[in-house]
Image (cartoon, rainbow, N blue to C red; front, side, top):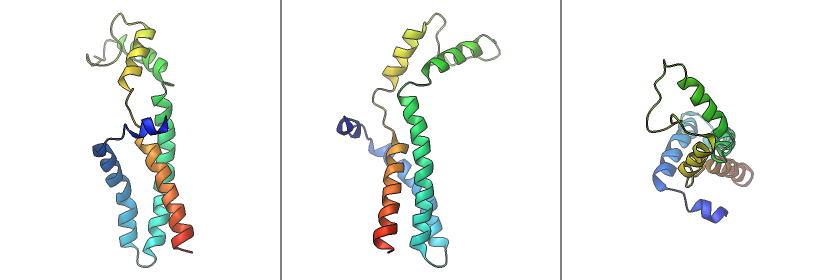
Length: 135
């Protein structure tokens, strides 16, 4: 099952996530006067832990934990008439919850959790750097 999920990795979003999340540790490592590798390891650990938290919340979203809440929230917002929901997504006029849940499940069928994957990778990399290279 894990191998099946790893096949869903697309290089474009992965490279984008890597560039954005490694920018701060790289800048921190080059701007510090001494011990650039220690600064890189520390900032990589912080970024990795933040990515883990974001990845856990995103995993909950991918498992459908927020779908029914989203259905009733969109339906309630629609009743105010001040807000015009987008026609391409969201609750249709006569859509029941089962159809909405099925639509949401189909929409995220091939999604991959990049934040969780990279968070685990960054924390492991910072542990390896801290204990193997720096000791």
